[in-house]
Image 1 (cartoon, one colour):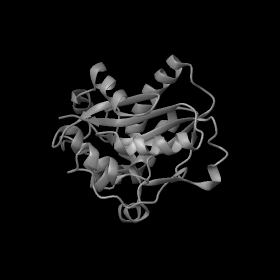
Image 2 (cartoon, rainbow, N blue to C red):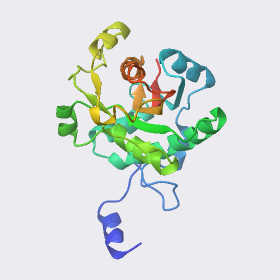
Image 3 (cartoon, rainbow, N blue to C red):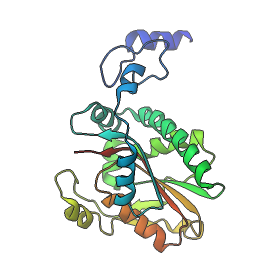
Image 4 (cartoon, helix red, strand yellow):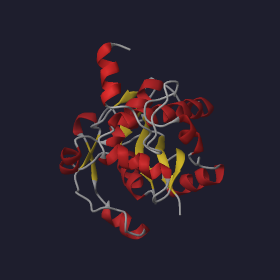
Length: 230
């Protein structure tokens, strides 16, 4: 560690986004203490089956359970609203290792395109970034796949989905996306890995999947950091 890094750590010590405690020197990452990370609730096989049934994808992968005010909700808050973009990159690396296993088991390789669910332009401008882009960055560090952050464009400024039921969510995101014309030919028969931070009812990713299939995409894998649980 150089002098500048040492000074930064002294003035702004790294703390765990879950517990608020200092990050230990031998910790595996700079964002979440390993003890807190290991305590996060992982999705069960039953949960993953439910995720598969929620989405219109060929395959669906997610890592953690998300409940209002639980530990993972703190991570999402820090990622989306506290400017901790690189926390998304770290989560993306975790997802990348899961995807390695998935792609190997399914025999899928060579034609994948990594695509984040986009934010509407005003929301991205206000936040300064799209958190799903950083999940993709982490995944792309693990997988050798093409990352196209602008393949999908959000053309409808949708209301927040938080208080809506399943039908209202689906209507809210109807026709929310369009394909960037510069990728119209590139998408044909290509396998897509579609990335979102949290999946609740699946309405948002399903709207994107509908468009991707219409434009000739091959197999589609939906991948998220977490799935909402009751």
